[in-house]
Amino acid sequence: MLSEGIGLVATAVLAGTLSVILAVATIRLWDGVRARSHGGAAGRDRLDAAIQPMVFLFRQTRLIDATPPARGLLDRIGAPGDDWSRLQQWLGPRFPEAPARMGQLERLGRIEMTGAEGRGSATLRLVAEDLGDRMWRLTVTDPQAEHAGIVVDSMSLHAMEEELDLLRRALDQTPMLVWRQDEDERITWANAAYLRRAETRADGVLGWPLPRLLDAPKPVPGAGTATRRAALEDNGIVSWYDCHSHRMGDEVMMFALPADAAVRAERSLREFVQTLTKTFADLPIGLAIFDRQRNLQLFNPALIDLTGLPTGFLTARPTLFDFLDQLREQRMVPEPKDYRSWRQHMANLESAAATGHHVETWSLPGGQTYRVTGRPHPDGAVAFLFENITSEVSLTRKFRAELMLGSNVLDGIEDALVVFAHGGKMVMANQAYRALWGDAATDLPEAMTLWSGNRAAGAGHSALCAALQRADAPRASGAMAGPQGQLLGWAVSHLAGGRVMLRFRQPAAESLTAPDALLALDHAPDLTGAAKVG
Image: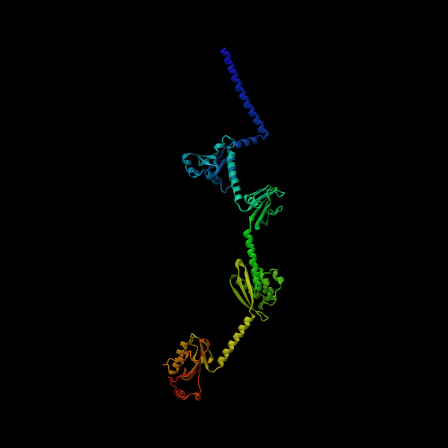
């Protein structure tokens, strides 16, 4: 009986073992059939890749080999630099102690550390091994996913989730409106800025699909990006946006950048230009502004009046040399000796005006006189101002002629005349005075020294000095010795503005008084005759 029981037990155990082996074989066979039905070797490769660890093999900083998940992570990081630099940028935030610990790898041979995955609570494990011959092997695993069959993909998934979160936050923080619309112009996605503006317009109640806020430009096929400026009005307040559209497959991405500052600047510039234009239109001076390529960009009506150039010619934006050539044909420039010298003169005018302030006076064949001023402007531009100074030149010439006439009249008088200003400076002397006393003295003290003749001043000289310094008496006269010892009569007259006029005359013998005649006969160098006042 005992032997029969043992045999039954052995038979049962053997039957159970055979059943397990048969079940395992059946599962393996079924997996092989499924793998072949899904691509054979390719399916096995994908399965093997899914459970491969993330391993990097470096020789110093050069990547020697890596598992497919490790290469996929490096490709997804997308940071600049070599493979070691990109891996360090990914490991740095997760393993802050990695740089210090890696310096001990050659001494320790193997280092293991843990770190946090991004901002979440997941924990990563980093194992670094020194294989000798300056080769390092780095293995990164997720302990929580080791038995879930996603050891490799979890690392790439975390990297993609971080990048996705960064892009989502960036789009939500940007002040520009971003949205996507399909072929029927229905909005299928929008960023936070767009949603906020839409909620404001809808009083906080939004439906789906979202309302269109702006009439964005339609992208032109083959043109890439289309651009236009559009306005958005909320409660009477108008906001401007520069809208850009870009086609992405069957849908279109729209970007609306705030352009309020640009619109205000353009409006201010336009108003400023209009103000300048009105001001230039009222100026009597002709204005012509040429850009850095020397094309006419701005002119005022006075330029047409002064030069007589056709309006159509000026509005065609001629070059500077075409402008000057046309002036030459209109006989509005000085007549040159030859055309070569004319062109050289105009080239010198252009270069002088471009480098600094330059002024020329043009005497035209018609009798007119123009003042041409060239001034450099920022960014290489040049401005020319044409001013008719014919009346000013005529007045100057007339005034100069009157001065010459007065000077000739004074030189024709036989008496020696000299005028001193209020401060004693000599302002005028005629030819008779210069012939009598010379041109050495330039003010009253020097003239007094000259009149004394390096001799002891006599009574006549002292009386003259006293009369010159007295401003209360309108006239004073007397006699004194001249430079050759001759008798000279003098007369002082006080003029307006504190000026003093002094006249020297050689009196005739019959016109002398008795004391003066005695002085003339004696030729005394020390004249004692008293001055006559009044």
